[in-house]
Image 1 (cartoon, helix red, strand yellow):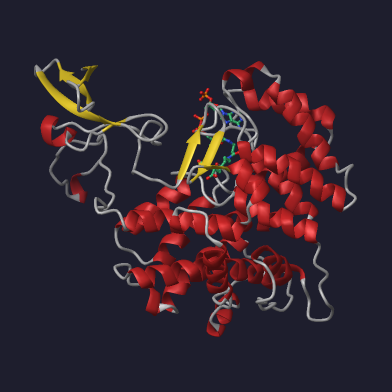
Image 2 (tube, rainbow, N blue to C red):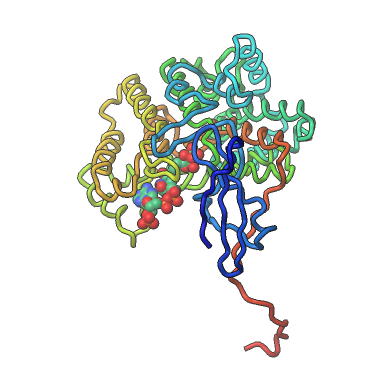
Length: 443
Ligand code: SDX
């Protein structure tokens, strides 16, 4: 089988790839579809019908699963755009509510649009009072991600008036409810784990301030909001908001493709994000930095990470797409300094270990050859711990911020006229057909 690219005759500059099956002396022409940015795709939708063969790409290293206009990543250049806007500019000049609007509707909002959107989200932050009982079914030491999976999934049992995915208005209400209530649920999971009373959302606070207030305020005294920490929280939300077709977003799209309700789809995304290879890495980075302890153990750790026989990996390093520095990690590192300075923790031993680990790894030929750089998870945990969050809350915060990205991608899929249920095939290497053997005659 070989592939040659032929440019179609002018003027329709449609290109195609011809696959030739030498065994059967057959050739199939597959269209090349160009995007506005990034690689072209080979449209293989008719491959099976015309050749009786599948493509094979476990882990989807070379597969585009959908068409999208939301987020673009150039892994070689370390570029991340949301609806065309660079993440560095959004982190510097925008705020999370505005980025939510941009991801959902495709354009930055006008003053009036932003005010209406923010009001809509603010008015949906309270959780149905009956749902408070669900928390009581968990052990106090349940991982917050287990609680998030359960409670977000249970939202489909309480908000029946926004589960009909064919109704645009219900889709919009469900989107607002999820963006608004996930911070409340995450904060309640934390409060439940430490035996403190739930703190209700307040409509006079910003999205990030509300989350800090629900997490750290107690009924016995007035919570003093630190504007530097609130700004850092808002920026951390922006940095985690969306990231193209990552594992959890692909999970949400696949669940949504069957017509499942949005609450169930987001619960599926939360479950997938929990893995240490994905959103669970921020928690794993802190555990690794604590395990390293002092800087003089770093050469030993890097040696383990290089050893193909050792399944140890440097958490917070490497990425399927970025073969350059994750642009989010650069902003996260800057935010780390701001928060530690504000809190008078500039000689934070974890940060010192992280900085030295980054310095050594980036000069190591293994990491250079494999193009492994710090990713979004490498510094976020240091900031969150300094702000007072336990490591068990780190991935819950990632899930909180990523909910808008999951919803925006789910909405785009549902509204795509070409959308159909996702149903991949396989390369079967199991037993061929054989007759049943009664138990008496088995060896
Ligand atoms: C996120 O997809 C997204 O966009 C995700 C995310 C998002 O916003 O949604 O960006 C969030 O999940 C960030 C990634 C967080 N995970 C970690 O930090 C865990 C540590 N990183 C690795 O597990 C790994 O880098 C992955 C999972 C992130 C990417 O793995 P890939 O793309 O499958 O790459 P790979 O495992 O094939 O690695 C390529 C090579 C391998 O060596 P060889 O088999 O070629 O010999 O690089 C090595 C790996 O062994 N390698 C590492 C390494 N990461 C990859 N070696 C040591 N330490 C590492 N961290």
